[in-house]
Image 1: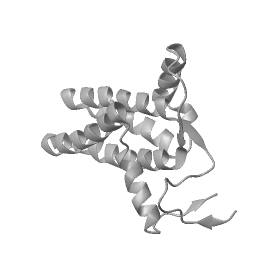
Image 2: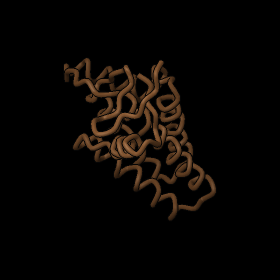
Image 3: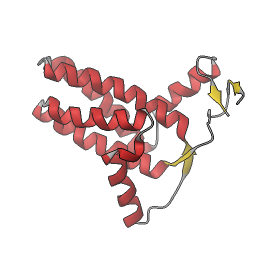
Image 4: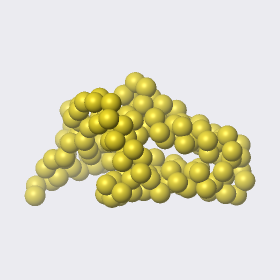
Length: 153
């Protein structure tokens, strides 16, 4: 396969995902993340850590949040809106590292720092869930246009 850098348009690989499912997952992240913050519980954030890891590293079919989101979208017949997978997966990878830091901060009882990191995660997840604004995808686009990310087609 030929590798090339894609610039101005949204970088793509050959896979598509349902944006409605992605936004539903983001909404679930907000709710679970709020619970982790409210209870200051690293076990709750650990569940998010596992889920982010599954989605970020190519095992999304095992993600409980993705499963629940797909079932919800199917049950309520919310439809299908195709979007490129690569930026969403990149965003999930960033989320994985952020939730790792958040969980570690909770584990070591650095609650103020955990609240800041968790708040940032919740802000970005809320933007995705409520408005379809994927901050990780925007970062992906910029890095790709600058040549830092190569996408194979």
